[in-house]
Image (cartoon, rainbow, N blue to C red; front, side, top):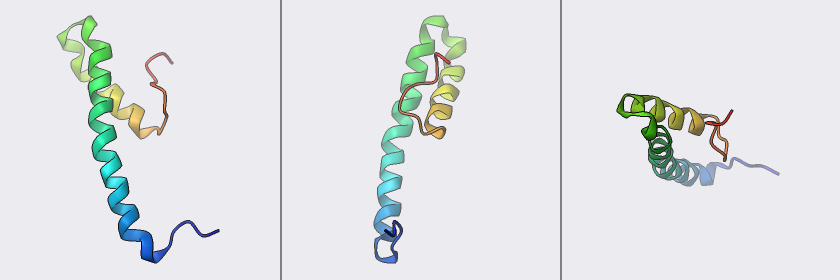
Amino acid sequence: MQFIKSENLAGDFWGGLAAMLVALPSAIAFGVTIYSPLGSSYAAMGTLAGIEDRKSNRTTPSIAS
């Protein structure tokens, strides 16, 4: 089974880009929401937590670990 085919490469690229454009802002918003009760100075930490969670390709947040 061949996963990468030259005729699907452009569609795969644009599909991945579209998924990233949806997932990254929502992950950042969830990170900020989780850290907001701690105070406004923790907003940057929440942003970074959301970005790092998306980079790890996990489906569950890494806040508890």
